[in-house]
Length: 212
Image (cartoon, rainbow, N blue to C red; front, side, top):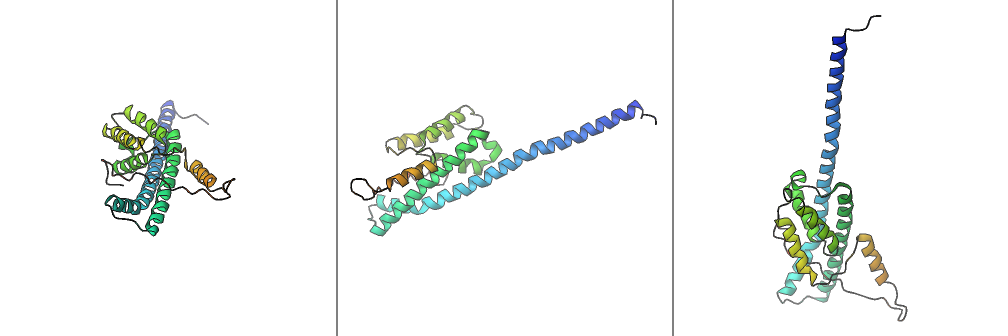
């Protein structure tokens, strides 16, 4: 059996290389696209959950600011909504920290304007994890072409506002739940549970979005 001419072998190798290159590129680009789409869906879901919890809380807080007294029922509801918003913030920070540790801070050009604004709201509401906010500011400032100055500046302004509130700092949602469980343990001296009213999260609208 005779071997094919050298030109035939070269053509076959070139064809095989082209097929491999095309297939390889499709695989290489498929994974990032799937990751971006998954990230966009997750951010949107978490943003919607954040806003659903904050809107009714914001209404009650505005009533108080307008000098309209709250009923006892409204006060209890406000406390429940405040704690829910705190828990959501902690869970969002835990998830976002895990994502950033693996993939870094995604550029707005990669995830799109809507996802960028939604993710930024999550960062804005991370008031109980100031170290994480500082970390994100540094990442934004080291990539000014990706993150315009208004983003880190808005986050700095938020941190300056909340600095005087002395909010308890938590690492993630699990730590927050553990602290809440510890607070509910019967007091050794009195046998009663210690009841503390949660500090309502700041619901100020950010300059970059209509979100609360």
